[in-house]
Amino acid sequence: MREPFLGWRLLAHPRPRTPRHLLRRPRDRRERSAQGRNEPFGISALEGWAAGKPAVASQSGGPSEFIWHNVTGLKVFATPDSVGWGLGTLFTNFEWARWMGGNGRRAAESNFTWDVIAQKTDQCYQA
Image (spheres, rainbow, N blue to C red):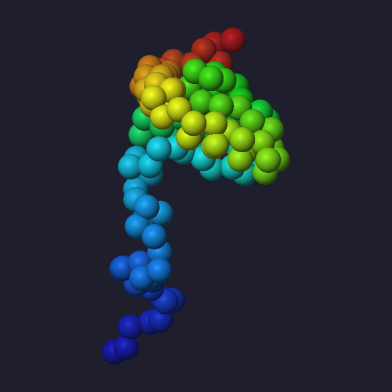
């Protein structure tokens, strides 16, 4: 019996013209940026923090509530020029970017564990 067609699979190796620096895993990169028009919670910022990377996020939406500007990442406007400014700013001082990434990792480890989330959820129901 023939197997059903499930769609095309991508090749396991990259195209020869893809630069190697673009293929590195997110934790190997110097920054974490996932800009979208609507990010209600900001899971991409937390993923970057978990990898020890500073976040660059727009001032609207969920990430603006927990990212500390110039401490755990950069808050930018939701325009291409502003996002470009934020990413470019990170590349001007790698030590500062590493420091912000470390602060973000510590914030993620202390404020976004399942125990903390359960406690905050319980407080919402108690109120």
